[in-house]
Image (cartoon, rainbow, N blue to C red; front, side, top):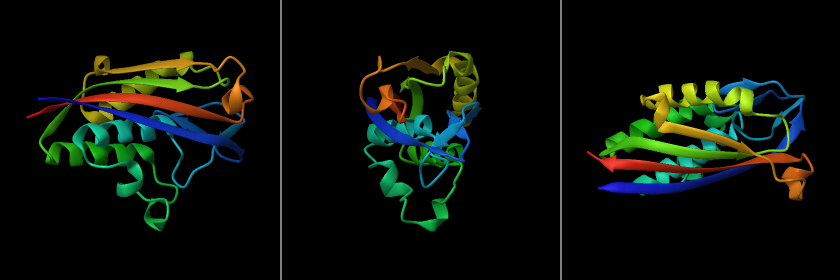
Length: 158
């Protein structure tokens, strides 16, 4: 059986933090606000995978009220999610992720993000697709206040 899940995440920019997306440090004067490292790419992907497995959402498994997850590396949360999904009898098949940001320009970093995500999932790089889009100057993203990410993940029962 094939299962599909959709994930979404958004974070606002803040001063004094590095920008981490898809497990990759991206040069930018501001990072994203969040309890963990605020990697919106990984958070959206985690939600998509959990949704496909019928296992709730990121807040259920890694609540921001729990000090255990303060400044956590989201790639470690992704590894934990992949183990949880496997434990429920599912195998990761593929993911399609769209990052929506006015800046920075993300095209030069998509390859590194794809490689990092696929490696953490134990999947071939071709199983993870990343795209970057702008919001054409509209809304909080267009004003440069933050980033949003939409992810779709496919799992297969084993």
